[in-house]
Image: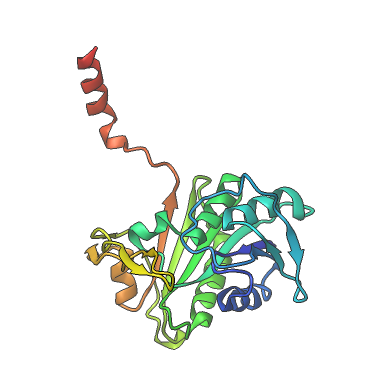
Amino acid sequence: MKILLSNDDGVHAKGIEVLYQALCEIAEVVVIAPDRNCSGASNSLTLLNPLRATPLENGFISVNGTPTDCVHLGVNQLLDEAPDLVVAGINNGANLGDDTLYSGTVAAATEGRHLGLPAIAVSLCSKREAHYETAAAVTVKLIKALKSHPLPKDQIININVPDIPLSDLKGMQVTRLGARHKAETMTRQLDPWNRDVYWYGSLGQELDAGEGTDFYAVKQGYAAITPLKVDMTAHESLDSLSSWIAAQE
């Protein structure tokens, strides 16, 4: 098996190194990742500047682009043959609920799926970075299981793992996305030259975090395994919207 591994925390992040070491036990792994932290990049592409791929001493490849760029460039130019799987992570911090829309980690996985490849995103639900090996172990276990239960062609798997020792992990739960309240307002500060600067505020509090959600599973000590698809169509509204449009004609 050949795996293309990327992330959004950057090619030098601890999470991608830990996951690389774990995946090398089961596959040939090529790491192609951004040259800097691209958290929040979502599915953005670099269209107005050239992309450069720089091999590093450890064998990783650094790209001056986004997570989506890295996967696209890897599959279409840098690899001799298409990988069997795209894996993104391990992200430093959770990608739960609405946060998946902004996540560069999830975007790297969805780009793999856009290119016709099965893909997985994995995140450690803490900023302490204490137990990446737990998330790595869950990922390896899930990849092994995919051999007998392949992913549907329109879906990726989003894994969120609590930052606890592997021995304390209660298992895995299949979940749906939860939801947050709206985020806090942006804050305004002054720079040393007395000019206004702005920062995004804190994430919104959990709104839909009950049993069955990814939020709930992680809080209970489980790895949340959430199948995601790119189709954002509100299928339940098609008939009612069609009737409304017809009435306007």
